[in-house]
Image (cartoon, rainbow, N blue to C red):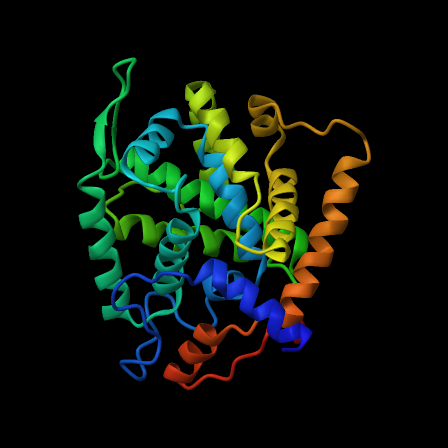
Amino acid sequence: MNLREMIDDSYWSLLAATHLPGEQYTEPVGDPGLFGPGSALWYVHTDVTGVLGGVSGLLLGTLNEPVTHGTNQHSNYLQDPIKRLGFTASFIRGMSFAATPVAEKLAGIVRKMHTRVHGTMPDGRPYSATESADIIWTGTTQAYQAARAHLRYHPKPLDGKGLDEYFSQYAVISEKLGATDVPRSRADVEDYFAMMRPRLTVSEETLEAVRFLRGPYGDDRTSQVTTQIVSRVATDLLPGWAKRLLGLHARTPLAPLAARAAGEAITRTLRHGVHQRYVEQAHQRVGVPFVPPSTL
């Protein structure tokens, strides 16, 4: 196995260990899916920066304590993080690139899963994965951090208009899960976080989730080291207010520089080694050539 194959194998062993039922990208032929080639969402989600943004979005998401508590109560991610990561990645991939009936099926599966996630926190606050507010928080934190990773590490990032299109399209994913009044532009997202910041709390449960997310994953040393680097890069991507709340502000002036050098290195390495088969299949389905980000 050469270096490129080793990178590809390690990458997909983490992100594709499990799949939602019915995830596929080849049929029906000609169906562009919810967004299609040429969309801002396809452009952003094709690149490996999405991995950095995804982990960073999970870190940001911990600040909504009811959502974090609900996740802890109704999933086994602490015992089997690779399986949980695989299902999450499967959903985002499918909603982004699969044909319309496949995306609708995946959304239905997740909506059904969400009906089991509800309850009350010890302090009396309710949580429910079917509530629009909780769906919006989860989707917006993911989209926001994906956009931040894209802007910092993509070889040719979108401009402001393109980012507005990206947020508008990502809102469709949240709407498919039952959300309404989802932020649909850069301005909407900034207003949303301004509204939410006074409501965000940090508990020991939050900090435990953060410690877990910033730890190593994988069964081999290479995967563990790589995921540790990814978590540090993902931490650096957080907005300053989130770092302060979580106590993750840089301890030395050189720490952000080191994280960004690592981010550049890891995105270049992944672009060199990772074979985005599902993106190629989606392009083939609609008859459009695929241009990898590494060639831009």
